[in-house]
Image (tube, rainbow, N blue to C red; front, side, top):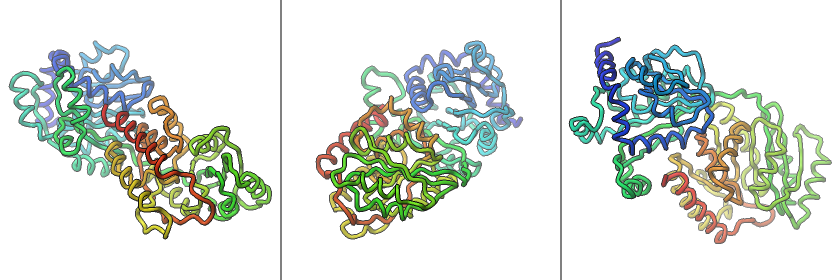
Length: 470
């Protein structure tokens, strides 16, 4: 072990006996950090914390299995005494020898004490399976003078650091070692507890642009880069209401993808014989696609999509709007991106290429751009076109999205926001696929610009309180 590591380990061993009291004296800060971890780590998951200290965070997460790693023998001894139900190892983060995979890896306020962060990330990668989420929190270096003063006054434990890294430094090392960032951000503008004031400042003011850059704690949520097998089966759900003139063309143009492609039509209360047309086209078809059709019991696109998903058998789930404004041939771009592990929640973007004449009205374009800015800010992930109906993800990830319903509630009749928010809550990697948006050739839109726009605005405000002001 290098002399720099020896110094830090000696300091950690020395302050271990005071660690519990220091956490209590800074309880507000640790409660907020614990809340952040609980928000991102569902109960009942397997969790390993690298640099676990006394095991404070693991104790609050209610994991199915919890393992803590720290190179301070003093910290590990206290962690074992206080958390006998968990497993703790005295081990260097740069040389982890565990032969086990976990659902979540935590590296909280530890990265600054690592001598070789790249080596530590390579070691941590061995603890990850394809769906593991790696959660990193670290101190904003702008707070260095304040933290030095807090150490001098005995309000914070004093320990040497090997590095001060910013988000670009950490993201670069993550990419070099086989991870990719999902989202990142900052939190906690006021780390001391003042009744009413602290929560207001941290929940609201601390999330505003400019002020957010001054927050004490930064975070990155990352995942291992994973390539799926390209031999996946695909289900394309087509919600169809008053789209009789497009059904045959959809079947003709949907490409064969993976080892098998099924097209699942879900008809919803049409007045133009769409259902009869779907039945006729499916009955007459003799090509390579597997065709199914159903009638939704409820109302709205979201209900139709959920009905379709319940009848799908594919590994990959796709949505294709029956209005044909998104060319069915473009679905291969989504499939290839997913199969190559480039993203987990794939969303079509109609606002990259020039729009075909009459494809989207000016007011709709402005509305889409507004929601793009709001969602990127709310979710800490870039998303350019929130209202494109074409969305793609795996069946297993859809189960994660569904599990967020208890958190989000049933608030979206269209399903676009529902899926986006659910994917964000599950920390899925977003990726947008540019498409060339076409004008309708049959029928009229089922969306009202004003009444539905107002509804979408209310849902955006709802999301702010669920994702941002917490």
